[in-house]
Length: 470
Image (tube, rainbow, N blue to C red; front, side, top):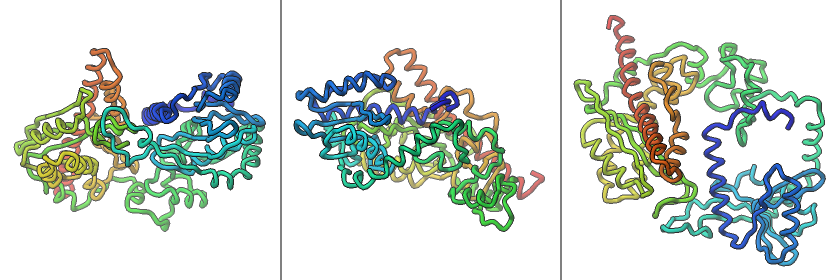
């Protein structure tokens, strides 16, 4: 409210969610043909109130989008206000999620309170969310099937009596000379991450107990005991194996690591996928938020350790799945294990087997060859540089600093998804499209090369642990 400049920058993941929310809201408005948009921006509150009042008085307006309302200093913008008759309206809050959540009911309750207090008559107070069961049949999405509307008026009415007290408490905080002293913790990421997290935690020690992996109940238990750093955790405090290894802060190599690394057969493939998960289906036969594979990378290591790289990147607006499968099967052949990092590739392959039945047998054979490096590291190895995380973005710089993602134009999967969508569906400059394609290929290739090098260094460490003379 008073120091917005202290907020952190919106990261790629949050920006992608915001962009998708805007697209879904625009699509949802098609459910209300003839609706009028209040064009005043969020900074133009007075103008927005005036435009809304004009539309409310016009009986030819069937619905108002982004209507502005105010009561006793509480200002809201309503996604959809649908006219039911001359005096009655239906309030609809649009959400990009596939189900109603508690935080959505908070939004809905506040908006209902303001509208009722401003003198409107509401017949319903609804949440509108994406219907994940909707199957896109091609051409233009059927928005009446794509979205589901649920009336929560009964639930909202039960919540309304508490709203004045909650608003009074909020206003009281805003009258204080300084923000309240509230210790940062897991609550700062529920239901969304607070943009002031970095500011509030900049003085915390590097080994703050918040960074312990696992359930956050552990954080609260330790906080109650006055413990701030992982190093101060008493020896009698119950920790999981991973938490204990983080506390010990030393490299740990299981005696079973070597045998587990030697279970692979050559040629050894190292495979990574990138996918789109559009809330509004793009291709016939797909559903909202269904992962659609658009890119793969495969580093192939032969028995003599020669390395070869194959890759595929969808560059058109056509459904990429069949070409993805055909090129992938050609690269993988029928021999050797396939090293992956997590179970995500397996999940995508099984979905492809159902979506493209003519390749089901071959895809299931591929699934049978998968070998998960992540599960091996989680079970048999730990390095202090992991800081409790087994993400490849944490593991790689700890073991092979020279092979990090720094310097790449794309550095994580969220950025990759956004870049691919932009390249295929938004960008018109062919030079920029080529730049994005190059960046996508480099990023995905880094993921698979990382697996090659991680497996090698782990093998060296495991052999040395068994025989230090090696």
